[in-house]
Image (cartoon, rainbow over the protein chains, first blue to last red):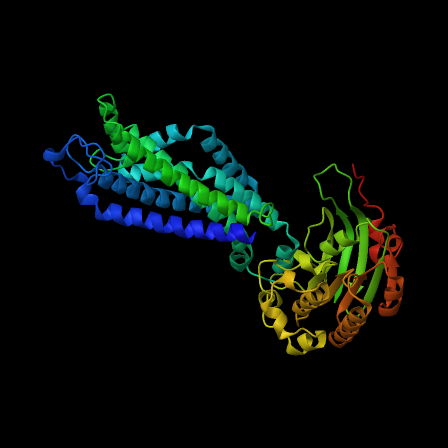
Length: 272
Length: 223
């Protein structure tokens, strides 16, 4: 138990450091990522340009870092927004019951019933694409599973004898929610939030790849992958492979952290 | 003051399932210490939960001084002590929060119960059942309290702790003119602390008593 706790903590710190580096360097390299230099175009990975350069002589490492940084920021934003939606709807559904519960459950089924990518495309298009379109699209499609979890947890907590005792001792509803409900919900919410990260990042990249997300002038991973498709046949493998692998690595890292946290916080596995 | 259960019916499941309680009537007055003893599974705990307002009866009423108990806001004048105190406190909160849930507690009560300051910085899992039960008692003994329902509240305590707890509770109840309902399988305990002892038949049988004469003819058909 101690070992897993320690290794998870270590992994978390490492991952956080790495992600901070990516985000910061990406932001710092934003100008370099769009800088063209035709004297160095189409270079395969070499020492000054570890990820090579593209047909306009842009440094692919700078572009990848900038793209990842953008993806992570979009991921963080959407994961937080969808977790907030999930918390609000899940709690309201369980606490108010009746038609509110029916409505929220129906909404959850509705959103879960439509393929995510299709819904994201539609919402993103409706919101005028771009950063806000993608953010809205991903945030509005990723809350149902977490909302369902929150709803179930609140329903269970409501029946807990200690909550009823606290209520009969005259604890006002807002204090019940803050002192008694939130501490029990937080582990699930936190794990859910981190596990939403990789989804959000992947979906953002996919939508952008399909041309319904971030605009082509932004150095997003989706844009990079989409542009490089035309050059793959010409043998420039580094244009797609290295940014794609970086994206996969970032996604895996988040998934790993989420999974570790879940194992730690879930009562079924916490004592192993 | 009186706490009155009038012809209570209760089901845990939806309509159509057999009722857990049916036609239960009971009157408890301030200053009384009423014992209730019945075989397991009759619904003693359910009755206590109804009387303390934790559940709403499917039929009948719980009245405090003639007013439905559900109309009382804030600290409920009828409080319930559970058999397992670890179920009655939030496992994630320190006991200081649990003890002062309803506001600052009476210093004399805490001293009388032997609640130590060092307990209050711990979590419920770090205290014994007896210590936890004393915290549960301590947070309910407030000036607004009129009736205390003890559902096997001392069953898991050792005899010395039991005796100390009861001595303190009885003194407190007498001083404040509290009404107590003591549910227990321990006949010796009931004999010793109660002013009258009821069996399950006393509260469920259609009684010809003048105060509850209406309970007989309105008993429901169940399924």
